[in-house]
Length: 369
Image 1 (cartoon, one colour):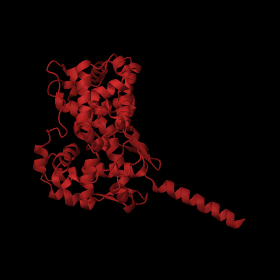
Image 2 (image 1 turned 45 degrees about the horizontal axis):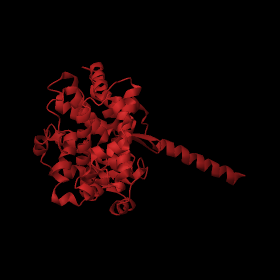
Image 3 (image 1 turned 135 degrees about the horizontal axis):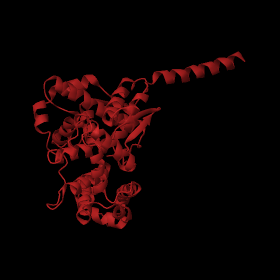
Image 4 (image 1 turned 90 degrees about the horizontal axis):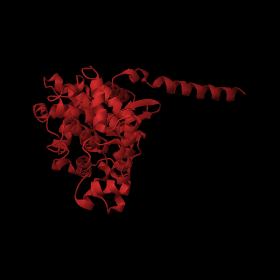
């Protein structure tokens, strides 16, 4: 009897310890979206060891890597789009071009399909998606809700230039699902088009000090498959909102000088745009550290599970690292943001010959990058 009672007590104590060791993230739910993302990924680094996470950030290595960077160069490249800008039609009005930016952001995923895509038609994921977005927008500039919802799988493949690529069907299927969900989400909002919905929402938050955050939240709630980029690790909520933040950043860069509805007061609070290439650069510099088991999986090109501990901890570690490194840049007097830094690592490091072969993690199932 006593041995059984002791065992029950030990199990209870272990459960209590598990609860006590986890930080309280409940306060983050009321934060603006960017702050929610920043706080959750940074707080996670403090408990990465006790939670036995497979990936974490080394603050010492982040500081060493930051010390080697030319922050003047980082700031000089701040306004250069790292992925190549969308080609807007000369006749497009602001509301139509803005709608195209949102569609592009929603469809901007598939980096893990880059090898198969290049083998098929010589283009990577973003150039393939860019072609599809520009094709769709040229046919229906305001991106009507009913039209998006009724778009067929065959038509989606045609717009992407992937009609005869059976081995890429899963990628096309995901993109088709995202576009249909956008149409469905707009219909549920009683919006005739993406352009109408976006501009009406921007009218509502015009001049709001949390306008960017509220737009991120609206995108995530209305189009969750494309933008509700959150996860849980042992009951802890981790927020990324990667693509929603990228859309808001792009809208600001394109239009804030032309229309004050896009002049978001909280634009500098955005977190860095972290994709597998940025993570690979940070891994190469030992800023993002991993267990041996995860390192072997990455080297073997094993697909990671969406929302799994490996994927979430990798992304969180890289996002937190950009926060630390950007802070160090600001301490030196440079107005550097995590967004600038992420784009710089992607464009200047990731595309250089020394980093082309850096191993990126794969996740062909995600719609978030």
